[in-house]
Amino acid sequence: MNNRKVGSILGLTSILLVIISIIVFYVLRGPNADVYLISTIFSMLSIFGILFAVVSWWMSKRLVLLIVGLLGNIVVLVVAFLLLLAMGISEP
Image 1 (cartoon, rainbow, N blue to C red):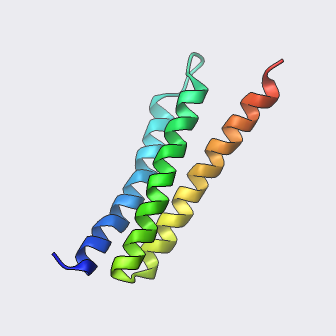
Image 2: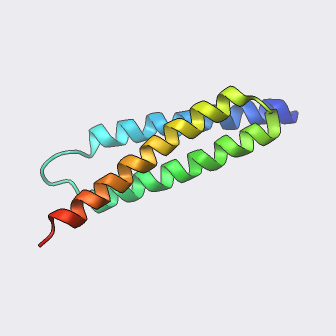
């Protein structure tokens, strides 16, 4: 496989990690949800997604995959940060 095809696969994987994060959000919600586990999962998925987006751009030079992958994963990372911030504020 050439670099362009591998880069495209990594870019699509980056976008897939955003979709997986959304699915995890809807599956693990509820009154008895472990918020720290959910935010850890969000953070790990978004960091891997950002790395995949950057590597995909480096290998394939497709700017669209970089922008969509980075924006989606940065949004997930911000949601995880706000979730942790809300848990820190709400504890006595």
